[in-house]
Image (cartoon, rainbow, N blue to C red):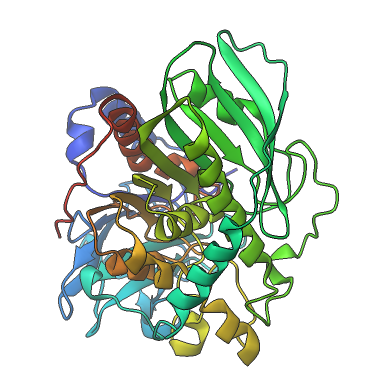
Length: 439
């Protein structure tokens, strides 16, 4: 019985030339008599980078494996701009041996494509993405005139609150590492998390790990695995709960108080993130020069905000940060997490004060950001808009065939490799030099 193989989207064939084992494996698959109706085409972008100029023809060449048969309805596609406005629809035409899937977009945007067969099941659709005028993608709403005044006022109020740090040792089997639970006083709530450090005298570079969205207990190894490398680590819980607990956190926390900037759940969260920096900076075992913020998704969102609010952050290393372009649904773009109610004017006004796009101009530290071109959780147009607002040194890691990290973990190799390289450089030398974006 035939089954749907996983869709394949390749950035180019150059890498396979250097890997004979992979070539042999694919040759065996493509020549197999078991191939049948529904074998997916291979999609190769016109530009290997997946990025195009405004008005330039953008798209892919699609090639079918030799033994594959096209399904009865063909491979139908829908091309949209920012996953909202339909640009083109059609059916892939393989009459000449290969098919072209392409369109032209006359403004800066992300091209989002769905190719489908009409069949049911998780492998019945493949998604593709491309950036059009990447460096020109701009915010859809202006930054609030009192944005800086609002946040500077909150930081001033927080500064008047004593930290009152409480540390409790936690047993760990990791050799030569000390582990503690941490509790810090913030403005109206408590910072909680795990602190880990090498069990020796000395001063260490600091690493703040912020957490992805959801309600779940922190795992001690998230901190200890970094401490083994030589970091002074604080893994900050997104919520005011003991790090191994989820009691008391509402599942709909993202919507709590979101009609007013004074009551938004994210206000206390962002201030707790800043208070964590206060604490690490006060420790005598911090080296006084390296303070890195890192995280994925909502953890990346918190990292960006923390760097914007606190110049003691010396580098930002984040993967697919959420929280950008939160008014998108009102302006021809699909929105991503936190997916605030775009139909409520008060929610949308409040959201502007928590949007990473509006924090980005305040960042002075070098930044390394990974973006998935087909990410539907942290939208690429949002991340790129935010990236374009950063005035300091910055590096973008385009993952052109990646959805959000938990959906396509196998497509995160660029982030995995570059983030390790950057963090290693920061830990050992105290600095890294962002690679400039090249179209």
